[in-house]
Image (cartoon, rainbow, N blue to C red; front, side, top):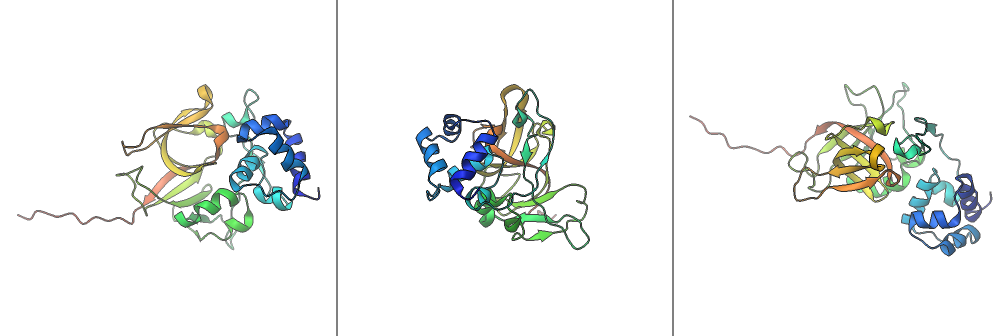
Length: 243
């Protein structure tokens, strides 16, 4: 495939979708999808590019440049013909290792969040993130995310760090536990209520009562990371009463 338009058409055909079905999924017209698949010089908006890469289980870089896609591994078998119900479709997970071959824990600061949404499957982007070896966290794949906003106060505050472990099978999501959810709309830290089997998604809940619960369909989710530990940068000095 020599250009962007041909790659998009081929990717759509491989997923057994027609142009109208793709258009409905990303909120565009069928004619717009046809333009993307026939005019290689058209610049695709970044949010649309991200949605297309999610639907086609690839990366934005592959759509744009035809770069070799990272190796992806099936996590679980599809259930009732809908693998997204369990997160068991082909998802890209890129990691880095140290000289001994042990996986590093990549750090995603707030300033790198926008880049992570596009480059989470790009080895070159992941390699630009700072990496650390965290004692006691060696079995599994870990990432460290910086907390932004106040939706999880008082549990978490802006600037805190959460040490997270990659969740391969979304059927294992536990109600009321905290997770970092990488979705097409952004990176959030929430508690969840698992409704994948009943409704095809999860309810996300903030610890801050000023934020209302919301629902995320599995098609909106790219990665889920379970919060295993927190590192606080906010050490309040409490006044002590001495006798």
